[in-house]
Length: 141
Image 1 (cartoon, helix red, strand yellow):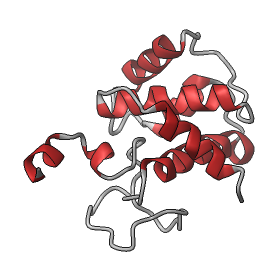
Image 2 (cartoon, rainbow, N blue to C red; image 1 turned 45 degrees about the vertical axis):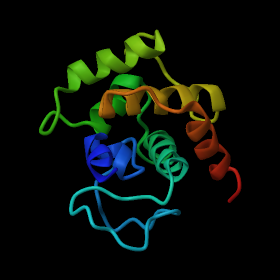
Image 3 (cartoon, one colour; image 1 turned 180 degrees about the horizontal axis):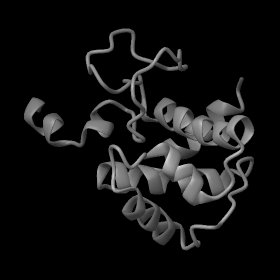
Image 4 (tube, rainbow, N blue to C red; image 1 turned 180 degrees about the vertical axis):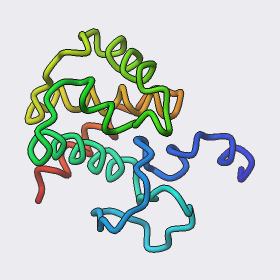
């Protein structure tokens, strides 16, 4: 069983489908013990999706980022990623141009964007019920 768990992508093992790097942020749903030195670990995938969606919303609200290209460039900087390939991957998955301006308050839009980011990060399809539960957790605050 342990070998099967290690075969899962890191973001899936950590319940952090967006691979959010550890920082001083105190996200809801963090595991009590953080054993991954680089990435947050959440108690469930839904809390990982909640953090991913909230981060994207804050890109708009706090940083003024508008387009999908601007958001992904911030999410996956070129110092660590092939950002152009990341943007193309997410846009292809969502069937939108990179100049598209997502509605960060729309459930379907944000769940789709979170699922597309998770797919790119982990190489596997997102469990949409986990993504939707992450959205619901945002609205329980």
